[in-house]
Length: 399
Image (cartoon, one colour):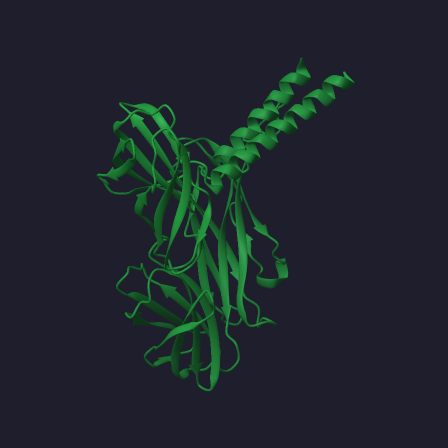
């Protein structure tokens, strides 16, 4: 009986951990990062706040993560904290001493971990604790000798009219950058260059950052693109790439018809759809439901096809209309692609030798409930359940 209880405790704890571990933290840290420009033998104290966002009782340990004591001599003043429900926040202080020099230039990061632990670890019995941890980063920027720039390319929210590229230049060297200019080459995913843009000229002091913006107005259409930034500064070059998207993958239903329709026989339907995306969209299919006052009269699904970029294609489907009477019916047409569904409500008129569709009321785009993320989560839960049952039967057999 005791073994069964432990198995069920394990079972429920694993399920709960999977479902909530990515969303529940209980406490936070502010600020999450402190940035320091290197100065030889600099000694300072700093602090951060731990915020009890859930107003709960808890115990937290604060400790260093993979830091050599003799590198910056980082010490934490208060490392074991007890919160009750009335404690909104507590302050953690720490001190550090920078060396005379670092062997390697560039950013050096040091991590201070705050982790929740059992309130009374010495108590007996079974204790289930979600091991929640957050970190505060101390970042020390050590300048490179001479001139050295790093670049970052940002893309603002896009639309079908224009895109704003923001170029951020960081002077990580010990000398001033006199002149810097960025060239942004834009490629489609076939690696074909479709445009080139230039930024204004910037001068950046040592240890400083500046940004400039350039606008791409002559868009070639919705799709995914790559922007390659080359920053030319004082006879040197810094580079970075950025993938971005214009608009959304969009497939439209243009027309549906059936030639040589005969009521009571198998009818062939042609559904004309258009891919307005600048790349191929794979595994596109349609289905159609015909109903009368909520009662299903017929349903059929097309074959699955790939549609090339910026092109139209006819999908085919077949329906056995045997037993269906002439008349007017409700119809719901659905187009499936990229874990999305476009639905159109229509009316259909069925006659002895013809079928027609009318009254398109527009498209409703919705995420499919069986998208990739949900399938992965469902698969993890199934694996956990199977593992628990295997353990259960194994121990039961031994018993």
